[in-house]
Length: 341
Image (cartoon, rainbow, N blue to C red; front, side, top):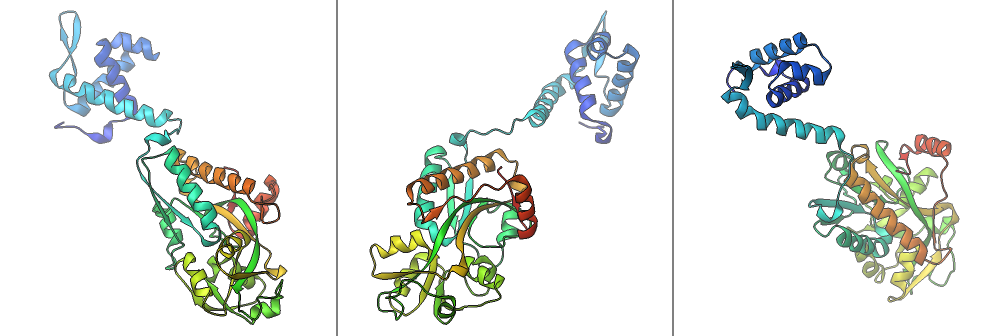
């Protein structure tokens, strides 16, 4: 479009140009728009100046479009159709047609319960997705990668998530300690806090990022510290390390009982000061209104509901409903926005 002055063109002018090319009549366009004929004539003059083309020329008693106007017609129609799709979009998706990468960070303790069911559900509902499940990055890049969209959402269990993340509770689980059968504490039913702090611990969270650990984060709130003697990058590596040394693993009861069902481990009640392990779903504000992201969060909620239904009472708990006022206060206190989404 040689001679086009883009600064003078806007959607309103394009719509009038579209009508002029279809009706080929200034008076009819003026009537359709509820404007005066001189006003539409002035708009036509403006369009001629912008495009450097007469656009409509006289042929007998009629107006006909120029060759250039005819060439522009389909482009104008396509541009306005695209704009209308954006402006009137109902933000809906068809999961079965979605072709994209989904990156979910899932933290440790309920991996064997949660992740397989979530993958199964996503594969069934959206078979063309490419699903990537990863652990919490140890380089501190979690927030940045969520902000950029590289990570869609997080299923986490640490007590103080970042301030710019939205959060929705999924469930709570009892906290227990697990040792090998020959550990000096293995014959006890429970462990008190003083004894607990005196032990050597194994953790999937490096000591360098205690804020991402549900245990070390809780201890920090109590101004306490435990000795993490061993940290490992893969949660399922822990039982094999634990079986060969006098270490203590603090984890969610469902995971401990699952592992103890096929390996000789002792399970002890954890110090009550540790509370329970709260699992939540976290996502960045940028993803809050996206139709696809909302669907993805609904799938996570569906799996959480399924797990709550199959786990015996007392081992796994549905978090209490948070009324709007309390949710707002809790969000301010913990630095995250609770939402029912």
